[in-house]
Amino acid sequence: MNKISLPLNSKMLTKEFTYGVATASFQIEGASEKRLPCIWDTFCAKENTVVDGSNGDIACDHYNHWKEDIELIDSLGVDAYRLSISWPRVITESGELNSTGVNFYLDILNELKKRNIKAFVTLYHWDLPQHLEDNGGWLNRETAYKFQQYADLISQAFGDRVHSYATLNEPFCSAYLGYEVGVHAPGLVGRENGKKAAHHLLLAHGLAMSVLTKNSPDSLNGIVLNFTPAYAIDDKPENITAASFADDYFNQWYIKPIFDGKYPEIMQQLPQSCHPDIHREDMAIISHPVDFLGVNFYTRAVYQASDVDYFDELPATGKLTDIGWEVFPKAFSELLISLNERYNLPPVYITENGAAIDDKIVNNEVIDQDRIDYYQQHLLAVNDAIESGVDIQGYFAWSLMDNFEWAEGYLKRFGIVYVDYESQLRTIKNSGHAYKTLISNR
Picture 1 (cartoon, one colour):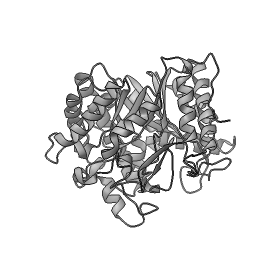
Picture 2 (cartoon, one colour):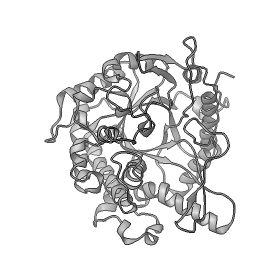
Picture 3 (cartoon, rainbow, N blue to C red):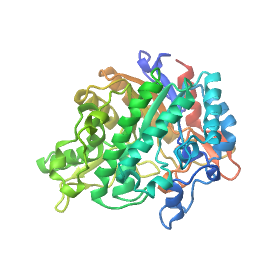
Picture 4 (cartoon, one colour):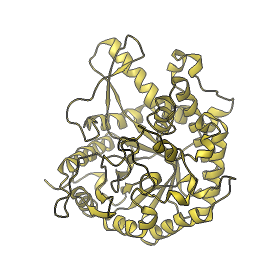
């Protein structure tokens, strides 16, 4: 069935509910020669870091195709577009605005405004300027203050064009994948790095919130966190304990400081070498009130007790997407309900949700029924959470188009629009048509 449907009385079928599509600067823009180098340029240049040996130098060439891409977004009938700003494109090495980079985004924001599409702007989606990484990156406390200066300058430059600012996208990925296990840029490895990088990222968020509140008081200002709900393999106490530890380590570590002003209790079980350096005012800065929480969800993880570590994550089973992630929509509604019970949440936006499918284009058509099914199940899970009392006000499909999928290169396709990377031709997939139909039938 080539459509997505929701219960007729669903809040998600009202015009007040925001539907959008999302992208990230490094994944689509290309034009790397027109900005400063970032950690992902350096990471891609190393051997055996990106599966297909590719990089973001051209990507979807959005830098040159932005007009037609906004035309494409408009044609989908969405209310909002979530994009990220490339820090190394808009700030010079000496810390001033780069007018060429700023004007690129001003053109986009003005075009979105003209078309009545709300701009949801993410200030950091992983592309740290390389010169800051050379000074320690997110392991250096000073980087948090550099981020505050960037947020200050760019939010002044954008004026009233932005509907919503997110400070960071998925600080877990930046800290854990980038500094602890090394599968993302900058590729550092060491358990002692992860929570230190995480603390400076969260500090950067809090510092940026203070300037956003001042410079852009009428926008929705918040943060985007990703969650991979942790399930125990069975109900044995030791496995439940292991899953709980993993949940605190991967999920609650990033949300609890924002809403409770403290880190999870498991910090006491971590060796002292892994503890972040917390200054007296830090937790007050990090827990600055937010106007919204962005939630990114793709899959769950299953854990059991370990003889050598705090937990063992088990291989995914059941129906898997092309990237190897289990399709388990029940975890989505359970996650949203549990967060709402645990914390005093502001309005929630689902800022990313989607599936990598092994798409093929045949006669200018992409029949991606598995992706349509994924969206159908997960939109129903969001509706279940709303009916259970969670204040969810919007949903963004990840992603607008196929793009550079980080360490997977160009091998995995998440888009509702197919991109031929040779010709840069865009083709709306069946999932994109189904998404448009859902939105336009409200």
